[in-house]
Length: 113
Picture (cartoon, rainbow, N blue to C red):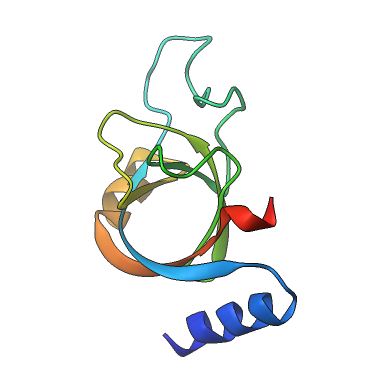
């Protein structure tokens, strides 16, 4: 938790508006969807490292810092609510290993945009 506050303080000192939020964080992977939609996010970009799905409260492009890793919201999901973040993983095994966790995360707020 100390490093989370250090990141928050650093961003604030740089004038980047952000806040700490507690989220239910799960993981997903591309699965076996039919091309050309497999790996295509709701925002139109391909999934990849540091891609996440978030609730409709956060616009595409919203930045989240989870466990010291920066993720960018590029996707939506019918089960993804405002208090839930879904991180993209490279494989089904990695997504299952991540599971679901309740974590504090930093969200860069809309005022920066």
